[in-house]
Length: 54
Image 1 (cartoon, rainbow, N blue to C red):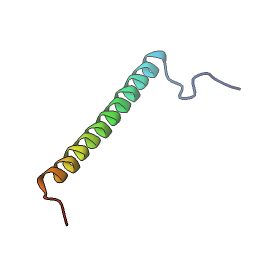
Image 2 (image 1 turned 120 degrees about the horizontal axis):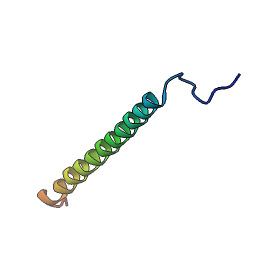
Image 3 (image 1 turned 180 degrees about the horizontal axis):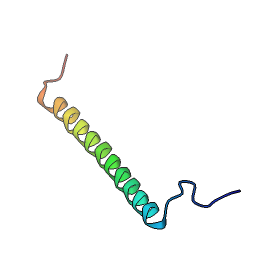
Image 4 (image 1 turned 90 degrees about the vertical axis):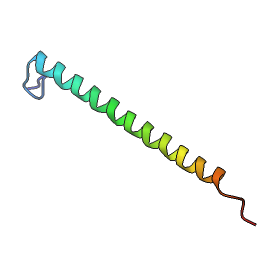
């Protein structure tokens, strides 16, 4: 016996779960982008403020 609804939930609950998953995915992507930008700014600033070695 197969069912198209493995969690035995109604369409409203499935839609809410889908929205929650999309929100979590977007939040994770935003976090990764913020960490990447902060890292670039941090590393970029370090090269400009120090005199060259040698």
